[in-house]
Image 1: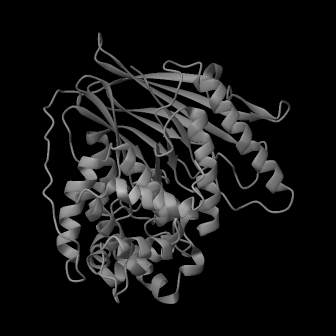
Image 2: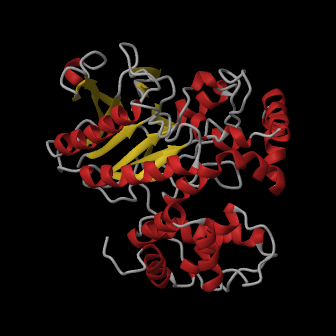
Image 3: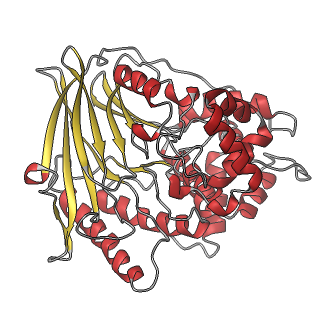
Length: 441
């Protein structure tokens, strides 16, 4: 069976001014139509999901993500997948630079200068970590709705899995290359993944597809990151440079890494060099030869037609097919975890909640459609005040909560309600708030 994904990057919601608003809105609408028309011609007649490799927004503002969410709802419907089947990683434009204070910049400059040890020190401190993450405040809530958290350990959560054939899976592993993006001019070659993100685990029956915003050469720890990727991954998807490209990089003994650089879905200035474009990726397993096929269908804007068409400049006849040897495709039995009921959280339970909720609820519920919808509506569609009121109403937090409710603790409070069997009641309450008149949407 084939797994089909719409790959977007650098959509830049919020960059438009004047007449460009109308031009770019039309391009986005035509992209939705192109996906609807093109995907129905492929095997299965629908996509499995949407992958966005950063720069959803232009200035990292909440209203930009509100527009992005509304558009993604239309796109997922056109692609034939669930509205929750979206995976995102942040880019440099997903940072709200207005939130980079003098203190924040000093932290980032220290990390740029001193690397892993400095980064680990700031991530270990709740207060320093929240200062570092505050730049992502708009993105962070949006991404949480799609279960792609920026969490306490500096690692992007919510990796997606797809089984191509019994015992042969691919995993879309997101990383945050924008972790220390700031007002610094030293970003190319100065960004940092950090040890926590560089280490990619091995799963015997699974091939890894890395999803990142920046190509590797933007990272100061690119050499070590490349060693992990070369030995643990099979495909790397990136954006940022706004130019479509694809390259097969030999590693050893017939094993290769496929590097896919995406063009910008909506570049800051569409011209003869940087056009509106996106990719459709089709993964399939060749059982006879024990290979993974990766088809890249390049789609680009034809200004004469005012519509999307095959990208025959960067892809032969608009598409290319790569056949990859996959040493990690070895069958392995799945491990199944169980969950015990637990009481509501208290203000002093932060560390215990973090360890328990991530392991139990998020892993077990990751494929539950209602859980996905609750996350999407709770974080993307409700205001911060509405979310706080719901948590207090369901006694996930005390009604007299006085401490700062961090984003991470908010997610853990929600997961505790799910863990205690309140998912459906929670969903009903969210729907009542979003649709007070009972309208069906």
